Length: 235
Image (cartoon, rainbow, N blue to C red; front, top):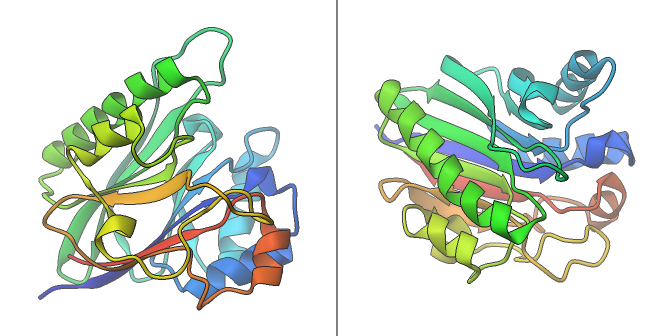
């Protein structure tokens, strides 16, 4: 039986903004799985990640500072079969980037999800686009899952070289079934799409986009400097 799954990706800017507004935004989306970018990375980061997850009504699966701020959260109905974190190949002078991976089950559906945040540097970002796909595929194969989801802040735009590398292998969920708004940055004045959810071709996309029908614009303006992307899919 197909299972409907709600995947949210959100850059929370190290919780430097209004945490109550952030929690209201996430709860309004009722996600099963959340891919966080820029989760707390310094002293007490594990405690901060658990507290943030609890404010959302979720739990930590894996990630945080040990994945360069990429963090996976899940709801109570989500079972975790496997999870790991890793750092992407690093170039001196740029922020270290990472990837959080998990194979999850909801009902009878199993899938692998990866959350990442690519470099600000174009050359490094192009390399990382292929790198994260390789890690995602390898992890999915080791854990015997066909369905794959890659979500995060890609610091690039549709039509860019790195975006095209990803969409050669995975579908851009917004392009498949757009609902809501497209642009994700900035939170107060969105004019570009940096954040996305990509899915393998076997995953059916019900809707994807900034869920303007579910969240308060006043809250998203206060919560962080990005807007969330919600993808509702069937696996």
